[in-house]
Image 1 (spheres, rainbow, N blue to C red):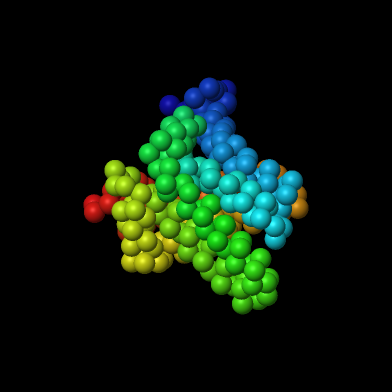
Image 2 (image 1 turned 90 degrees about the vertical axis):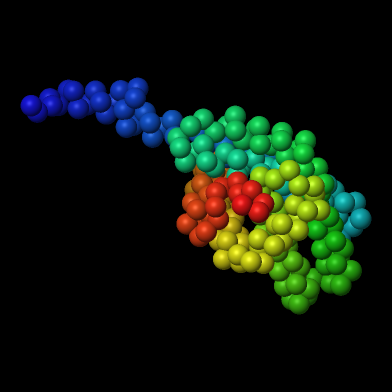
Length: 229
């Protein structure tokens, strides 16, 4: 028995139809990306109001503005699995952020400490090619370690957690390169002339979901792999 055209249209446009499902899924990506941007408000405000300056105040302010970066990354990783399942992910994001702030305060200081040290190195040694290249390489390595800590669901203390993250980056460099490439693509998408503003509201969540898919495809046991599993 054939289905009539009005019936097909009703299934397509109904509250549980294909269009409604796609819109609700896109809205979850929007909410997660917006939540991630909200967590990075200190860093974005510093970049807009102060920017890079070779002064003590600017260097310390810049380092302090990154104090929410690691918890925001863990929250983004926490929301990736619900996004893949089509569940509500905004609540998972904020629960992950609160958990990171409560249990991983020492780990959250790693981006700030690295930014402070690298900032002073560039300010004292000069912004020539070799210094900038070395600072960029170290920043990429630190970023990979911070992302790795976000994927580790472990009760270990900060020192042991960082050691486990460094071990993952060393033993699985293809994963670290995939994470950094996805992060770079997300950042570059926000700088495009026309769609950059729209990318801000979708690129973070899309990058997190892509990283979760890469983890499962490249041998990482799960999006929140336990140490030693």
